Image (cartoon, rainbow, N blue to C red):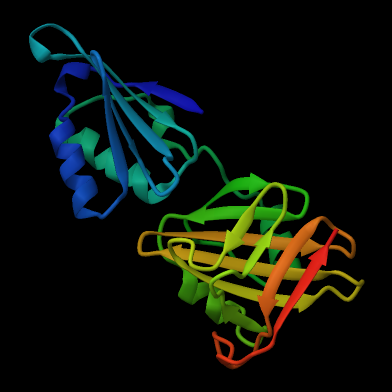
Length: 238
């Protein structure tokens, strides 16, 4: 996590920030503990705005804490700070994460996806899965690039999960899953969890015997959803 102090703090206008979050339909939580007021927001609570109140209910100290960078949420904060006339360290405007060319090329080679030019931030890099967040809904772009790959919309009780990450059907957003064999006894999966303002893209590389659990019905190339009476198949790799 990275924390940035806001100067001068007394000019912070929390009402203006909350108004903007409501307009953009960004989920947030507001907590007050004594003189501290905390606004935590984002699909995964990526940002905290903390305000300490001093005499005469004036802001005496304020800061922004970033857990995971999120381009769209950061843009909301930048506009809000500009409207308030509040200064912040120049490093705040820089991306905290980025994908080097070697990673871009690896993703293109293994998962057939070109992420160049997209607002992408890596949030989990694990043994069998890499997870990326986008500051907008990029499902249509992903679907176009993976056209021809067997896929489906995840149903209730379907899932792909390991110790480090998991995706389930009906988990608060639309989940599309793509699946194909690796040619070496393993398999590749792409899971795309999307809501109006964000996409979580998980890229799975699953060698034979990897500790990844998969519970999915049969997929098709031409349809995003299996037939209602499709036979369920459960594969558990341990």
